[in-house]
Length: 288
Ligand code: AMP
Ligand code: ZN
Ligand code: FE
Ligand code: FE
Image (cartoon, rainbow, N blue to C red; front, side):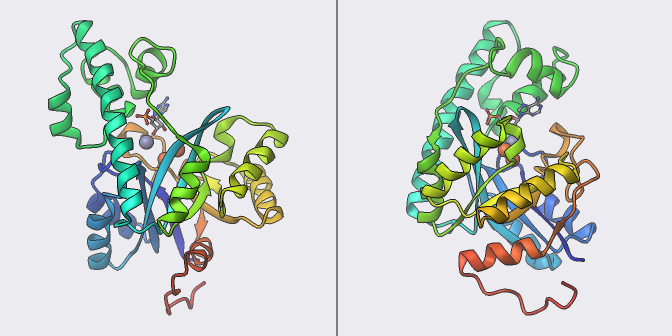
């Protein structure tokens, strides 16, 4: 069976592998396709697509947008037009807002006497900096033992260096992805700790605004969880998707394509996404 991974972060946001490195890794392990889904931006896609062409692996343009519904909720967008003016405008706004938040976090660390210089972080990590970068830095400075420890004691909500950023309303995020020609998908539904009733409310709200899919296979989701999500997706006529949420060395327990060892995302999921995006399927599908 052809396998894929539809949830991958690169250095275009807070992953630690460049788009080229991620594509090489994916090609090396025989994945048939990956989607680049960086936070707030599609800017890693061009490089990934070029590497994909050279290595014969299909690359799907995507992004992941953080929103709020009771708590944090993430919406993935697949096959958005990377050139879409409305998407570029909102993406720029999100990146700028994130940047303001980051400067406040860096200032809090500097005020504590830590040698954290935001300009240097930008040179090193690029334009979209996230809390995992701060966590990594705190580990390097010997203040935290691991990225997880840095999150728990310093950069998680409620901890001393945490600063909030603004979020797009969930309705706006979903509509934006549709306006940019993309397919909106509810990411990792079990991460929100909602009960069945609240998850259904969330799905119904999202569907009113144009949601088309739900991530049913995800790192750490066992067969029971996956079956529950697949049944929900079927009931609501949502397209099932799946991916690892690979971030490289800031989340070392998550492997590209394999997740925590249990992940297996079939190419069939991508065929559904393509149909929804109005994209012609590849002719070569003999081993589907
Ligand atoms: P940000 O968007 O910059 O506020 O950071 C959010 C990112 O931090 C997302 O990629 C989360 O998955 C990641 N994150 C949240 N908690 C942790 C944790 N305990 N360890 C590693 N990454 C985390
Ligand atoms: Zn991330
Ligand atoms: Fe997410
Ligand atoms: Fe993610």
